[in-house]
Structure formats: structure tokens, C-alpha cells
Image (cartoon, rainbow, N blue to C red; front, top):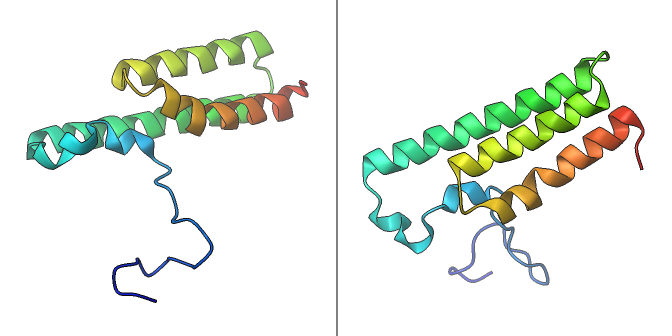
Length: 111
């Protein structure tokens, strides 16, 4: 293995992607973020993770929750995520949307 490749690189396999696309909000300008901007972004990422975990836990655990209310919670969570990260709709759709869809299918036996 050459010294320029990361330790986790395996020939024939692409490098592992960054699965948390919310971290790269500022793109290549991230190197120029102040410490305060980085701290704010970290806080928003953590808040988003907590919010999504809570929404998923409520939907999975509350057996009296109707499907309409669960769908409303999912839509509200998406709106809140996009309010925190306005330019990250694609990242939300790739990271959280499949999880939410799978959870709704499993919980409410939807197709």
C-alpha cells in the first residue's frame, strides 16, 4: 500500500464516503470558517441528530400514534432540518428519508 492512500483503502474498492453530508455545509470554504462558525455548525448538526432520533423513537415506540400524525411529524422534521441547513435538501433525502420511509413501512405495514 502506498503512503498516499489512507489506511482503510482497499484495492478494488472506492474510499468510504462521508455519510454525514451536513458537516460539509460550507464546502471548500470550510477551511476559512472561524471557530465560532464551526462551533455553530457543530451545534446545528447535533441538534438535527437529536431531533431526528427523537422523531424516530416516538414513531417506533408510541403504539397509539396514528399514521397521519406520524406523517406530519416526518414532514415537520424535514422542514426543521431544511430551516437549519437550507441548501442540504439532497443530503436530507439521501441520509434521513430512506430511514424514515423504512420505519413508517415497518411500523404501519405500509407498501
